[in-house]
Image (cartoon, rainbow, N blue to C red; front, side, top):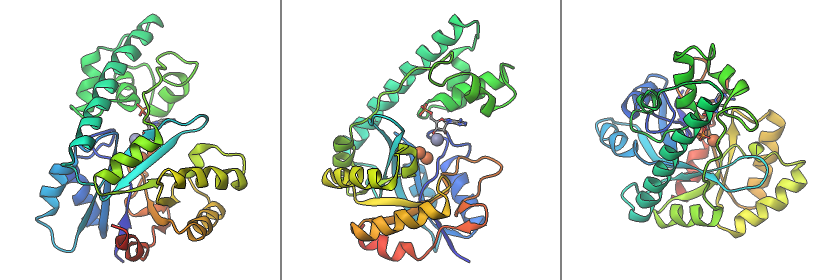
Length: 279
Ligand code: AMP
Ligand code: ZN
Ligand code: FE
Ligand code: FE
């Protein structure tokens, strides 16, 4: 059965697989439409475009996932169907990459104050020139024996109030939307439950504000969503005429699978028919 996945990460940000490897992985599990949506970067898109051009019956959706400035929970915004040669988008992502690299040095300094010594080169070895972040620091910490695995790192370190926490520069919603639209894409709120809203009434009023700023879609099918939430987001998408998307948020881990938003639930392929009309 052919599948679709509109949210995944490569080595250009904090994924394990290169863009070519993730496309191979998609093909081997019948994912015929795949969006690559790396954190704050489009650095993996050129390789993906070139590799995908050799393949029949496969659609690559060029994407990005911005971290948005938002009080409270975390607001991630997907830009789907963007032009990766768009100058303002390139400039912004290069800026964000610089900021991320500088943040890594601050994280390393803070860890050292707590007697945790990680050579900064080891972090950049993990990020392989891509958008560096906490997952790369975490992997280096595991290698150096400061934790058994990444999960343990994210319990003891790198989070608010723990050694190695350094906040990250985030992009205002209006700016991210304008960059995405300027590059020909549509702006979709990723896994909206991560906003940590109190109830769906609160979410609906937030959503209205986001729509006023140009939000055009909701990632309804997300591994962070329970069935009851999927249904509620679907209803809201219909009510406000928003695009419906879905994806695995695959990073290359062992218990993740492309094309599925829950272990036994594929993202409905049919959503692509309506989505493509908005591209
Ligand atoms: P950053 O963008 O550098 O702040 O890192 C955020 C990324 O860290 C997320 O996209 C996840 O991939 C990863 N991350 C955050 N929290 C956890 C966690 N508890 N366990 C594993 N990975 C996490
Ligand atoms: Zn990630
Ligand atoms: Fe996200
Ligand atoms: Fe993601």
